[in-house]
Image (cartoon, rainbow over the protein chains, first blue to last red):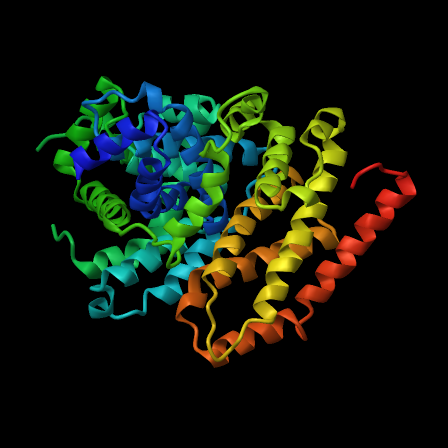
Length: 194
Length: 255
């Protein structure tokens, strides 16, 4: 698979449209998941993935032959997602002071779900997505970049053009909301007993 | 274990989050570690934070709709393929336009993409683009796009339900999906009747591209009904007519 990808990148760089098409068709579903996780919107994720492919096409000449293609595509998609979030932050409404209460209320209702029903990964995915949906765009992006993309708080702040204190605040709020929404499931799941 | 007074103060959620991520400074980390060694409540809270965050980390990524990769290629390909690489027209190839970025590039890309799919006698001169304002270029690109959409949808409407060979229509519809998205992007967030039609048109085109090859005759008929009696074609005609009228009022020399 890796050699196929590298070969496709090499051929696409030489103008082979079919090679580029093979990359698009092979990786778009995965990249959608990445963009969807950062942006929180399927429609926006589609736009982000499209923009990512255009960026990939422009940067074909910069790809280092020994690198992993999917990692490279992943990074470009995350960067495009960050650009999207930064563009959106100016349109975003300020925090609703009551939103933490709303998240908390939702978790109480969800806490009645039986543990065995959470065994299916689809259920967990749905719960996590629901919880992520309770975050603002900036909270979500900061949280995902820190927790799932492994960026430091400083790097997240630079990416989102936020001060470190504001970045921390966004991450703290995000974790608080995620705990309120998910803790009942996380505990029932019995992933850890101390 | 004996704890000093400072160690005995609960560390709080924010400090635990920083501890979990390894983002606290050395002194803070030592203090938290010492406190955790002697405090069941904070250890419990840290475990809860860890459980929740691990649940998030292990959740599978959301899957896109079926056929997403095909639609994505339909959207991307007009912007990256290079059918006219030589001569002065090479400057107009879409990758360069995409590289240039900005609204006008999107408009022109959609416009040029439309030109490629048209018959030569229907084409407006590409040199015209150089003389147009972004608003006018966007208007023309939208007009052309809506006309092409009507032609494709009319062909679908007249397809034989008993033997639907829709490969050609689906291919043309996939091109329209790409152009439709470009035009919507170039319009920014403006909401009007045209925006509504473009949104609805894209939903129908995507559905057609993704699903029509597996449709039964009755499903195709249901789709046709939405085009016809559901009003999609009528709305396209109305919007196109309004645009033409605006052109005429402006005396636009565009044909």
